[in-house]
Length: 75
Picture 1 (cartoon, one colour):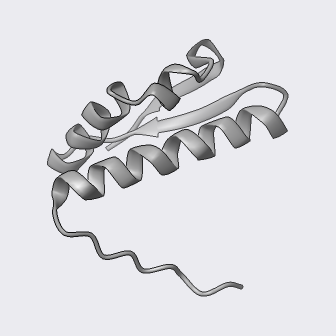
Picture 2 (tube, rainbow, N blue to C red):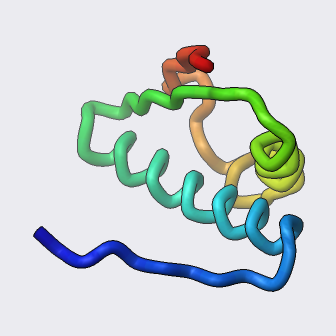
């Protein structure tokens, strides 16, 4: 098992942008390796709302095939 990666960012906005960027990469990779589909579990919370805002502003996120993303709600 590999060691966990610890990333320290200066503020919540930087954290949200980093999470959104990594999410786009993970969804694109999932679509490429899983027959074009990916799954995304959504939760609530103040930081995750900032992640969704960063995601909505991302050109890379707009390039994803969102019709091939299965969205699941959780809390």
